[in-house]
Length: 163
Image 1 (cartoon, rainbow, N blue to C red):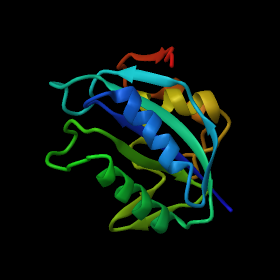
Image 2: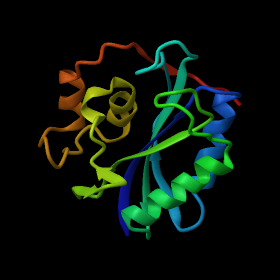
Image 3: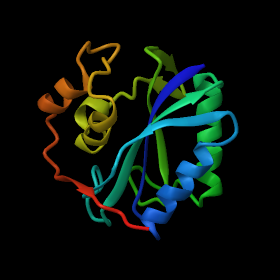
Image 4: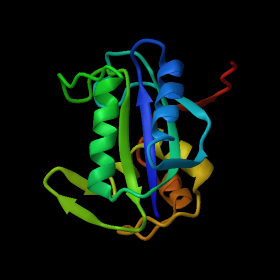
């Protein structure tokens, strides 16, 4: 079995419902959610003139390899109404593979570790909650260390979601 570290998030529609639906879908079909973070709210990053995002980190156990997992996640995004029209634009759901085991993968359509994870507080905060001691396979720093060094100063707020 493989262990993947995912970040899910979105800023369109019922953000909380989309996160819940996404976790249910991810946790089926040969993939099991091992751990999940709290839900965090963050102002939009990259393209700031849009609604705030809700984000959540997941650690999943899967029988799929990284390319097959990516294909499954992209299909799930489409099923959830994701339409890719502009870079960093609003979306119902976005699912990123941040890490896959301790592998380094460089393909034209898949780069793991996620190339920007160390620069994005909205990814590091929820990941730090569930995997603070995971070591980035290239930077050789823990998630806790990367968060302390992160240049991104956007506020990331942990939410209490009821229901």
